[in-house]
Image 1 (cartoon, rainbow, N blue to C red):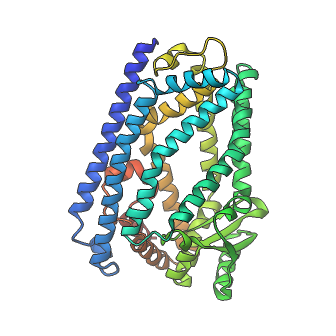
Image 2: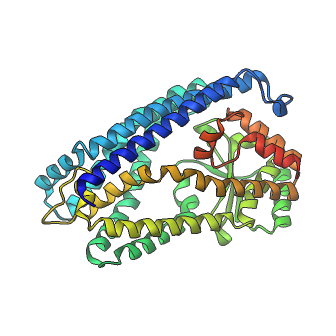
Image 3: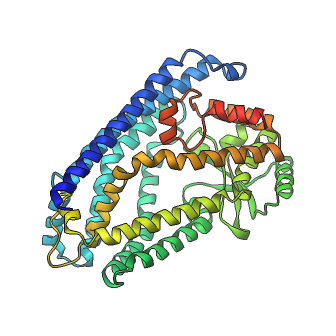
Length: 418
């Protein structure tokens, strides 16, 4: 393939992907607005019309913001690639630091910082305008920027050494560098799965042991019934940042922990909390977590192998507006370009991943109905949909592309038949 053909292919896929995303978002807005003034019949007895309308307005506001972001991100991507932004940045850095490892790391850091600065106003608007408008924001501007500084520092502390090792492998490990890089990435992911909760999460939130003894006994009884061993039950101060609620477990082996948002505990009854946790435990007992990790590892191996080939092709660089360095390594540039173009060429396959995810959700719901009470899970789901202002009437096609969970009406109908 020559560079001109690849440029045309990239531009065509980018425009097609953007058009599909904008079309899906417009469909979603119209569909939610069309059903705004009537609660679906199966929820009419439990969710009042004002709550349903709030969810519709919240969904429409988020989708409209997403539409703006889609356009901004597409323009940014074109600016970095076809309009020469990356080439200018590369030339500037080569003149400043040369073509060695310092240049490669500086190039990736510069692109990350520029992308982050472009996203920052939208993140701020979402948190302090959109979320605040609907009563979900509990964060102060000082906490917002404190989190930003912390996450940037931690990202650099962990990411820069990994980046250096990866670039070194790309340069010195030969044609199979991508296999060694994949092993490194897998090891890092396993490490994070095991230790994120104990090492990093406490830097952002406070975790305290669950103090409610009756609820603790109920949950321990559930864990005993399903054969799940946990290192502890913890409550996270999620209300410090948001009114949204959730529950999850982290780690593996003897280090598994169960974490409840305090917002979840304040809203649900003990039997409903048990049902929600039974659903989450279902993912573990049915090996969904292992399956997802396995799929993620397999896909990443295929993509790294593809990158291993692409980084040797001159048309890959030239077709995206970059002149490869004649002296010095192009590995950092290859990584950046690959991360830029991958979503453009893979978005249309999104529904295929959603199919498996939704199947897993149905299976976890069935597991929860078996080991707790299906009516309790239905009641909990309805409360969570209402409290989180999640629309009960998503556009089906938009949902197929973007939602890993089935629509509320479908989940409830399945549970009623469980």
